[in-house]
Every structure is written in C-alpha cells, then in structure tokens.
Length: 153
Image 1 (cartoon, helix red, strand yellow):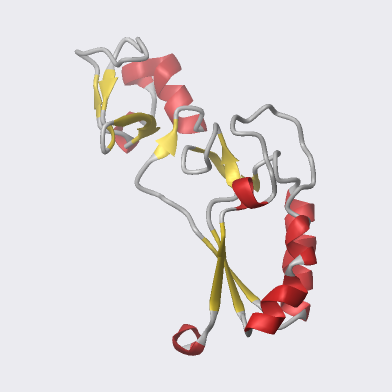
Image 2 (cartoon, rainbow, N blue to C red):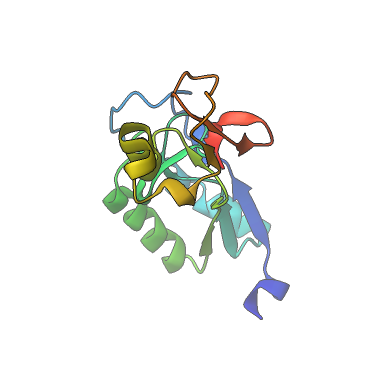
C-alpha cells in the first residue's frame, strides 16, 4: 500500500495556523499558511501530510460540531480545497484525522437530543440516561469520552 513507503508530516492546524482557542464564529483563512510550508516539506522528503482535526468544532477540534465543514477559524471548505490542490500539485497526499466515537456538545444531533430528549430520533446515537443530570445541567446524563463531558460519547 502507498502509506507503507510514505513520509508523513503531522500538523495540528489550530495551533500551527494560530487560530483562537475557542470557536468565535469568525471565518479567517488561516489554513492557507500550510501552503507556505510546502517547500520545507519537500526538502524533508515528505509525501503525505497528516492533518489533525480541521472540522467545525467548539474548541480544540476533537469536540466536533460538523464533520462536513472546515472550522471557520481555519477558513472555508474552498480555502481547504485550495490547500489540498497545492499539496497535490507538489506530490503530497493529505490524510485527515477524525474521531467518530465522540462529538462536541455543539454537534447537531446532540443539540436535537438536548431539545427533544426522548423524542429525538438521535437519542440512541449517544450513551444517554434520561433519569439523571449532566454536569452541564442538561436534564439528562450522558457518557463523556474518558470522563470529558464536552466530548459526548
């Protein structure tokens, strides 16, 4: 397989691109900074870029709100597509990191559970107990990834 002979370079885009720690809702093309590093990656022999989360999130990226959208603090989907084009033109593949066993509290399906409780068609997507209460006072309890309740399991 192609990855067995690949030289990976890993970037955590929120830190690398200088994005704010919390999602402020302001869209800024920061992800374009990666293009400036393509010559450096080429000198190192890198042929695959591994990007830790880039999806719309509440804070650090692993608390995902929307898996179909680049976090606005990094730019738009079109900004990311332009970065991918530049990387591909330089012979560098792109691999995206994603955690799919938990989401952020801002994830649309979890928001639906918060609003509709037992009536939500997404209630079984999460480990929810409607007879308890969360530390966020949701009126129901749920499991958080490794005890982190901003990462809804």
